Image (cartoon, rainbow, N blue to C red; front, side, top):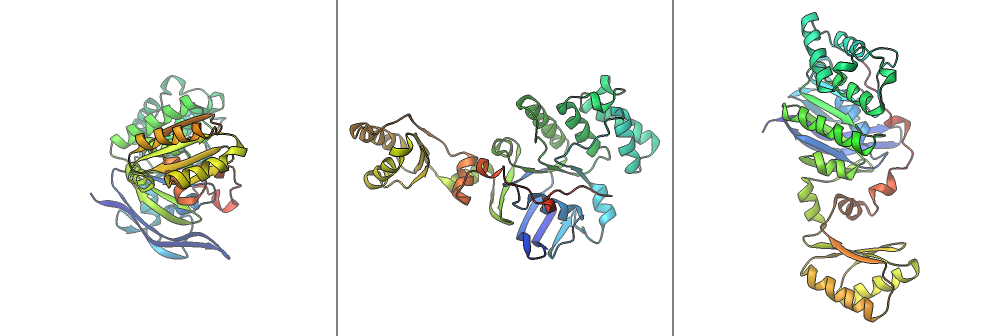
Length: 329
């Protein structure tokens, strides 16, 4: 499969701060490629470099074989971009928002009419086309913004945290719209903080932390990096967690991760037998158990293994102003 994006040894520094630190990866045409990481990891800076908004300190980006810094106009015509913030004009109708977007992309009148009609259908907003966008729900605004970013039929769509702020229903609905676009041949680059979103949508994922790519693979490949067996999870009291971790190490050679009242360990071989023996030993020693379970590795387990902390622990960190990048034309 042809690579539509090729990123080679990309570096971006802001003064003494290195936001992107020598990253390289390729994105095949037709993929949904996820860039997963906490706030401030370098996800949005990477996207701004691909778009040509920021100039790299070092490295090269090719979009469909073209150097993006030397072919800015052509590259921007090939790419659609949806930011974290919902950028629609609340005073204008859905139709008017799309009409302005079509003009910005220099669509011919008939081409624009067709594109707007299709966009309204895809966003399920045809019956609301003459309503001001300010009267829409959050989910409706996000759908309008999504099709607005696609009005020029780009080959590549970049979605920067597309479901931030949406409830579960609207998030699932947005996932379905993303799948439909991909099924039509659109290559999608998705940055997200949501582990389940990356796992649900992406063919391939790069995990980025502190400006570096620390792992790349399919969701299944990343999980196999964590464990080929099962994850043992124990909920206990804070006072007993250290004692239980010592038992797991001494009696079963399991290296446990302790976080307050939660303990996790990876059972590589014979997990069912190990689980049964662990339960029997802890009950014999009368150590308090609130719950004990085992499960296949998740993307959260991947992130903990790679970075030492849960992604959920990191999403509340303040985002640098440098990370709040808008698509300027």
